[in-house]
Image (cartoon, rainbow, N blue to C red):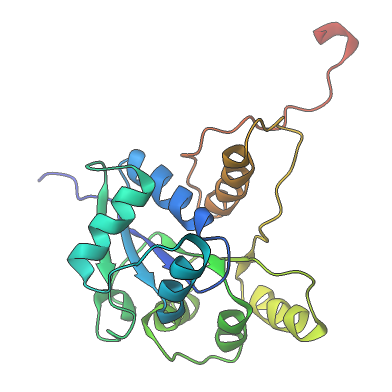
Length: 212
C-alpha cells in the first residue's frame, strides 16, 4: 500500500493589515510541497483593495490562481481555497485531519470571536475545530498597541493552548530586506506547527573565543 500524503495545513487570512505575511506563508509552504487548505475572511478582500489596489476573487478556483500568482508559486504543492461562508466545507469538521492551522495575519476582532467561542464564518469555525480537537492553532496578531481587552482575549486563547506569535520581527539574523523581516515572523509561526520550510539564519549563540 502506497504511503498516504501528509494532512494539509489550514491557512486562515483575516482582514488585518499585513497580507504580505500570508503571501510569504503560502509561498514557503507550497515550495516545500505542503498541502494547504486556505480560507480568507470577507474583510480580507477589502484589505487587498485598500493596501495594494488589488481585487481578490471570491470564486475558489480563481482565488487559488490569485494566491499562487501573489506567492509566485505556479505549480508546487497543493492549494485548495474555500469560500468564507461555506461552513459545510471539509475544514469545518473535526473528522478532517490536518497538521494544524495558522491564522496570519489575525485581526483582533477574529481573536475576540475565537476567545468567545463564536464561529460566524468558515475561518472561525475551522479555528474552533482545531481547539476542540486539541490540534495546533497559531494566531499571528498584527495590531499595536494592544488594549487591555486585546490582551485578555489573547490570554484566553493562550490558556486554551493557542500559540500566539505577534508579527514582531527580529534583527539578530541580519535582515537585508523587508522580505527578510517578513520571513522571520513566518518562520516563527510555522515553527509552532513543527514545519521548518523558511530559509532563516537562526540564532547560534554567542561565539566563544575558541570558535572565533
